[in-house]
Length: 484
Image 1 (cartoon, rainbow, N blue to C red):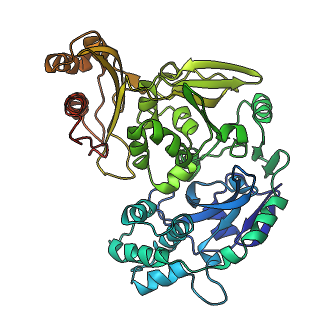
Image 2 (spheres, one colour; image 1 turned 180 degrees about the vertical axis):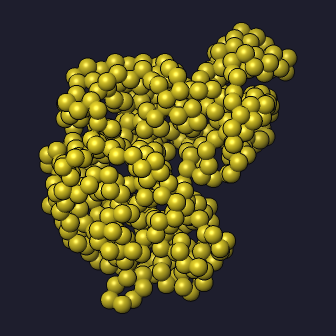
Image 3 (cartoon, rainbow, N blue to C red; image 1 turned 120 degrees about the horizontal axis):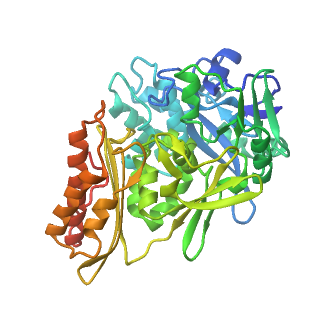
């Protein structure tokens, strides 16, 4: 059984299909049709909902955290112990919520199909920001597409609703909601079972390891932003899933003197602060990783585990000499991330083995790290080429070098010939040009609808030249990590 709140209504589900998305649950199971299906792939934001979770501060005080999610990519099992807020839950006693009223006042709704999703993103923005600026509003709304191109009035609605937010029912009922969520907080492994399909919800790494050993055929569900596409886009059935979002050990970020340890199920939103503090270019790329809704769900471990050749985080982590900790039963093993990827969608992970954490060395003043993402669209787009450069220069000579690319091969991969052309050589234009030529030895990229192979190789070479220029002119802010 799993339990959660829908707005303020307690729901207990025993035999629900674990392959059911929250979007389907709202529309088909509860008859709440305000939430719309636009793309069923997390691209348009028409299905945006907000999920409230219990969190504790360092003093042990309970509070609620509200985050926008794409309901088309969220399986119902992930709601266990949480509060689901749909657009129907905003109105109170016949009065529009302040974000709804702002959309009406500012004429932010045109055809209206996308409006519920915008409203929910504005609601989350209002709850999480105090007087947000234009950049924050744009970030909050970047995952919501308006096909009528009415963004200016929607941004006006964001300013109106967030400048002086009105106290709403979620504020007045906060203590009650916290109490209700504490009462249904999971205390043992949960399960959603429809007979031929099941989803298990463990609470500890040890329980997860045992369950995965018992069910090696199971699919691990973290954020689900890729896994859900198998159901919504490819119409596959997932007979057994194990949801890892309640395993606290997998959501921790620990900082030591030498490295960061990031739990594999940590949402990308939560990874931002720690990674941005050490590597600002990593933080800047995370802002362009996808929409806020996707970053609220997607996890660092998931981005690695799906082994996509165009995943944004692996090239950066490889250039930083990151490691992954793999767990199978009670056994752990640690390997360099670059060794995890073997071939297209093939990894070194063994049966019943999962990524437990990612170990990232902390920044050093001796190394200069930069990352660049090239895509057709500035925000919420997949890379054509993603490049990461991490070099150490001593007395004008390259003493250390790690360069990695995504989108250039079947796996995220180091440019070893390029590195060899630089290592131990003077840090000058001639060395850079030799290294650019060596990139042709490292990669034979493919042509697809994102870019031709010629474009990819030339872009990779030009990004190396760009890195060199930026390192030569540190007094001028030339870096543009939001590179298109």
